[in-house]
Image (cartoon, rainbow over all chains, first blue to last red; front, side, top):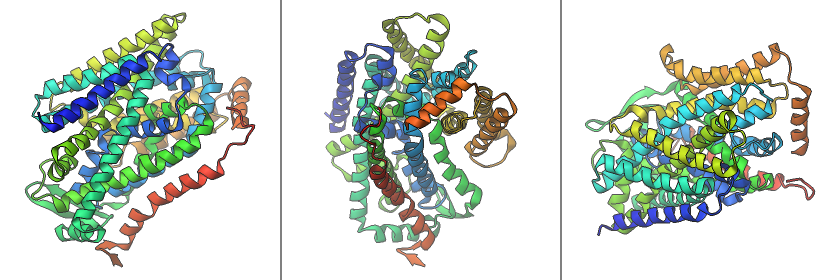
Length: 497
Length: 40
């Protein structure tokens, strides 16, 4: 039997075992979607990074580094993301953990918005849940497409069989164990993907004869590959051609990816679930070093090593990690390293399924249909929601040339601009009003969706984030200020920190 | 200035920001120490 097969199967069996084990630890809705707020610092750190990076860290970023070396946007986006991650951990994590507990123990972001602003109309909750469902559906579908393509490329699986197999395993452990299963599997998955990347990068640099040899190798292929300000056009037939400077708009767009962190529900929910806010400083240290800085460096280096080490030009730059691994290691180690790609994809899809399920269960079902539903009933509605959302995502991903992959950057920008400003203002500005948050959310989200029609080439998150923030400030200042009950709660949270 | 075929500013962006953030995470681990009576 193909050793890569055996490694993959073993890995999938471990995931299912975790689902079955955590099934017995999940009794209430808070357990199912927030793990009963009892995550330790290591699991929080690794699961936040794993659900954040997705297949992008092993396919997308190395692909960009392969296509352009230091040039174009790969280095800038890595810097932007690392800055965003640090600010999120340093300033948002603790405050969000404390505030969500003070605000009537909110367990989802939409519920937090409703409680934070005492929104009796539930409009904030419904609009934010709708944005979550919309953006995540496409995000999840794109993850399933990426997973299916990995199986297809590695084992010559039929695309549709691969899609179904991946979806069944992810749904099985998410369905059974909920947040605890997702977080524990994320922990293993993060470990797997970060180790795989680091090993491939270190061994690759070593084999080429060190950093000097690697960078000189890049310069020999094309001088634009060693210049962070240069643009490069990559074609399989012609290779790497310099295309002038990327310019300030290109650099700002790449750095602005970091803004997306403040609005990603599947990452923010990790902060809400940590056992105590005192654990956050330790989580931050682990996440920033082992889950952000080292993986980003490794990911960039893997792409650049591919330029020098792989003979011929790749048809799809995003295959660089897979090709490099298959080329360098024996099939047993390659199986382990390639399972990491699957881990990266799964760890994001499972978290997104769960957050979408929580939006359906908590923000629609309990809020509008069954306020008096028992905890047991809600957990089961949550499980059925996971199944339902996965089915729609599989349907969207069914077409192999489906355009959902293109929507991933929309989803990151969409979440960043829709929820980033309302979260930051809700946590840090006492005078933010319910109307301000609502209008800011809508303006941010719609700007991202509609920006493409303006024809301006800047990443949508920049105008979305700015206009959303501006809308919050203007509407909050123009209308009636927040009630005393709201500002008292805000003061209580600030005093508690 | 070129080091190993990289321009000085490319080196700077490659070598400085990410480690600086890691150092910040280490420093803030020690400076953010919760007080004994800090509530959960």
